[in-house]
Amino acid sequence: MRIALKSLLALIMSVSIWTNAQAALTIEITQGMEGALPVAIVPFDWEGPLPEAPVDMAGVITSDLYRSGRFAPLPEKDFLARPHEGSQINFTNWRILDVDNLVVGRLRTVGDEYVVQFQLFDVFRTTQVTGYSIRTNEQNLRHTAHQISDIIYEALIGEPGAFATRIAYVTETRNASGKRRYSLQVADADGFNPQPVLNSSQPLMSPSWSPDGKKLAYVSFENGRPHIFIQNVRTGSRQLVSSHKGLNGAPAWSPDGRRLAIVLSKDGSPDIYILNLDNNRLQRLTRSYAIDTEPAWTPDGRSIIFTSDRGGGPQIYRVGIADGREERLTFEGPYNARASLSPDGQLLAMVHGDNGIYNIAVMEMDTGALRVLTDARLDESPSFAPNGSMILYATEDRNRGVLQAVSVDGRVRQRLFLQQGDAREPAWSPYDK
Amino acid sequence: MKTLSKVMIVAISVVLLAACGTTGSKRASTGADRGVTEVEVGGETAGGGAESMGIGGSGEFAGERLDDPSSILSKRVIYFDFDSSDIKDEYRDIIKAHATYLANHPSASIVLEGHADERGSREYNIGLGERRAKAVSRFLTLQGASSSQVETISYGEERPVAFGHDESSWKLNRRVEIVYQGS
Image 1 (cartoon, rainbow over the protein chains, first blue to last red):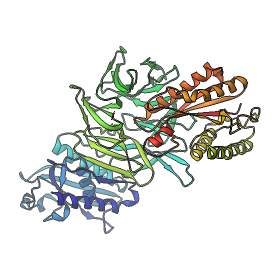
Image 2: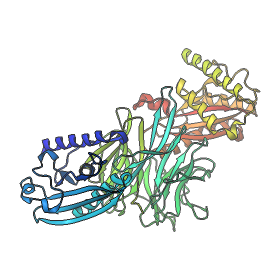
Image 3: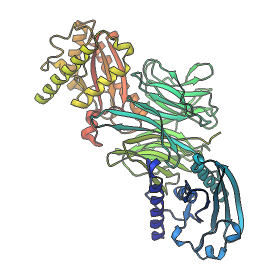
């Protein structure tokens, strides 16, 4: 098993080397996984004008499934055959390799377009689980591969996948003369195709996706002070939405996308407000003398979870939007901050500090049981995948800010790292709508 | 201290030169970019940030004590304990001196820039930096400065002056910088 993992890692590394031109983030496996589903993804047949397909579809799918921690893809070198469609499969070849499921496919050009055809088989029942023919173009080939990963994930796990989503994060680089440059980046969920959507000489903070995945709200110091902007990711058009005296921070979209929970200190200490984006009206939610910040919505849109140090150190609280009733949620450890709820509302992810060590933890909302998922020193900014299966977060490694993902059970961790500068404040996008 | 003074003299002349080059521009309104860039330069060269004076503009108080490195007024950084905005005794005389200066120079004004170390979450740290800046502001006004002379801004953990990931850097980053503005 160990050897199998190693060769798989080699396979993944070589995948990233092939496409190195666009890969500013690379994958590292930091922990193995037991009980993952054994699956084989056969390299897709290629029919086109070039000697090689522009995207290694099977490679992308293999890497996706592996990173999820739920699958153990068989290394390609162990394959006994390379079928491309159902009629070519000898299931015995796969049964003796203990593979439960098999993916085969073809990629071909039709004029300027591409057609991807794939089938997922149950090796023991010798039946097709699912299969599709997808028309796409060269630019979207990787995205199509992620969509196929989603289809396979859902067919075999029973929950939607989150591979065809994106992540936003902030990078900071310093040039030779020490001048800092901040960028807001958007990349595929596997870290490929990073694209800056905003560059600034001043700090950028707290990116937050609109629920339709079309816009980002964030904090920019470009006017010398922290102000909140909303930017259309596709067009780049942007608008200043909050520039009160003092802090304007921590924007978080309501589930209906019509309101923004924000933090303002215009009336004294930082408090939570709700900005109605239709009419620009502000509703003040908290009135403490403490730091109230980092609002996050409950999935039903009725309450806000937030950080407050009203009890001494920072802890997580909840406030009802209609009745203003407040309740403390965390009691374990001296420092709990930056919380967010899983899409089903069952798990609360947060930064959990104890003895000067800051890790990502999740608390079960039903029982209050807290589980620490990470073990570095300076972990921060947890963000759930839209299917709740993983949490993306920022950490520090050898003096660099890097991004990492951990499965919600803490079993599997993977590293996405930048080749230059510091990455931080990752935000996992919702599903595209 | 000797080295620090030297650094400050150099830094001050840089700022003065910069100010000469931009005579007549209204820093407060256009300012964001230039103002903050100036801070950035200061913060990174000397590590203390005391050099970010910006006494351009009027020249009215650019004379004696403010740019005298041996004056207590040359001390422009107040340091804090972790997750605390309590002003430690050792910094009270410094703040008092600035309060007195401001009281005696009604056209002078300052920006208090609050900062935090990198530990914990970023938005909480922005709140913490603001609380530290406001604590210094309150102390200044209690000591005679007018509240109209004092502005606060927080950068949280976004603008460290020391880049290590241990207490030797963190203690330098938990700070409020006093930055004199043109009037």
